[in-house]
Length: 115
Image (cartoon, rainbow, N blue to C red; front, side, top):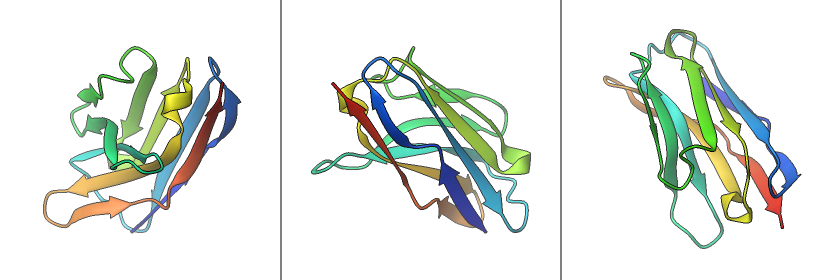
């Protein structure tokens, strides 16, 4: 199974971007899917995830600005990012977690927010 992320880019502060992630290969039936990000010199942090039941969870720093949506059965997850700030600049990684087989990761997509 491979995850392919897309949608990153350069945007001005206050702008929006949408990230998408799709898995190829066999159907995962992931327990949850989501996004991490890693800024230069910082640890990777969880941004948001969505469970197979549709529950969502967000980092405090993105609540009210980002919206995650996905279909775990179809192995797809998206992240709508609004009101972007320079501190959102990072490489964003999508992931899928399946209880029996663990984590699967996308290749990362760069998001740069200029001030």
